[in-house]
Length: 474
Image (tube, rainbow, N blue to C red):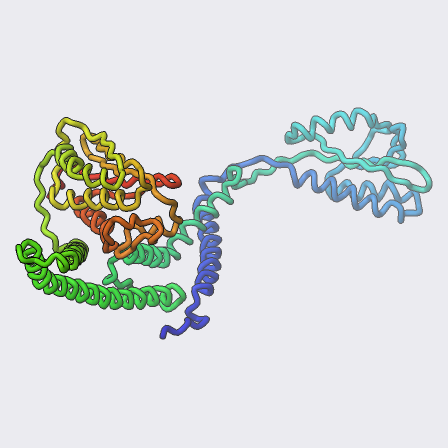
C-alpha cells in the first residue's frame, strides 16, 4: 500500500516555492544585469532644472508672504532681499504692466507682459545658458490685482541618464524568468518525460519495464503506482498466457486423441455400408451414424486447426501461386453445391494470372470457410458474388451475398471464436458448424500479413480478404 505524501513532500508546495524562487532570482538577475550594463546605456545631458527650481520656489514663497505683509513700505525691501539671495529680478505689476513694487535689481518702471509671455515660450522650448527664465502668478494685495513675476538667468548643469529601449526592462525580466524557471523545473520535466515514455512502452505491451522513482511527492507516488500496476499486469498476463497455453495443449491433445478412434469408427461404418449383407432395415441408421461421425470429425478438425493457428504452431509453406487460377478451380467445385441450395454463383475473377506468395492450402481453407458461410446464411433463392481485384502490392478477394438482418452487436461478434448465428438465420438443410469458420479464416489471413473484414449495407454482406502479393522481407 502506497502512502500519500505529506505536505513537505507535496508537489504543490514545490511548485509554489519554485515560482517564488524564480521570481526572486529573476529580479536579482535583472538588477545585476542592469548594473553591469549601465555604462553602456549611459548618456550625458545638459539641464537647467536647478535654475528653474530656484525661480519656482521663490515665486511660491513670495506668494505666501505678501498677503501677510500689511505695510506697503516693506514690500520693496522684501523683494530686494529675496532677489539678492538668488540673483533674481522680482516685480509686482498691475494688469497694465506698471511696476508697482520691484526689487533693486529691476530698473524698468513698466513691464510688457505680452513680450515676457512670448519670450518664455522660446526659453522653454530652446533653453540656453544666460537666457532669462520667468515665472508669474496673479496675486491680490490690499485689494489690488497684481502680477508677481520672478526672473533669473539659466545656468547649465551637466548630468547623466541611463536609457532603456521601450519594453527593455520587461523583456529582460521575462527572459530571465523563463530561463530560471526552466532550470529549476528541469528535473521535474525530465521525470515527467521518463514517466510518459515508460507509460507508452507499457501501453505497447512491455510490462517488464519499471520507471525510476526520483521523488517522494505526487509524481513519485504516481510512478510507484504505475510500477505496481505494471507488475500486477505482468503477473496476470503470465498467468493468462500459461492458462491459454495449457488450454491449447489440452484441446490439441484431446482433438488428437478423438480423431484416432473416430477415424476407425468412420472406417468401420463405411465398410458396413458397402458390405453386401448389410440389412436394408439397418442401413438408414448406419448412414445416419456415418454422417454424424463425419460431421463430428469436421468439428474436431476445425477445433484442432484453430488451436494450432491461434497458438502460432501452424507451419507456413508459402510459395508463389496463381491466386486467380486457384479461386476459379474452387468456384467450379462450389457451383454444384450452391445450385442444390438454389443459389446462383457470379464470379468476376480474372482469367489472367494473379500471382501471390501464400500458403495455398491455408488460403484455400479460409476462402472455403467464407463460401460455406455465405451458402449457409444466404436468402434462398439468392446470389453469391465472388470477385478478385489486384494491384502490384495487394490482392483483394470478396465474397458477397444477401442474408437476413443482424444487429450491430452480432456483427461485431462474427469473427469471435465459437460464435454462431441464431437458428432463425440458418439454412437448416446445411450441417451445423462449430462457430470457428470465420475465426480460422481471420487467423490464416493474419498469418499472411493481410486483413479480413466485413462490409455490410443492411442485408447485403460482403466479406473481404486483402493479401500481400510479395513475400515478406526477413
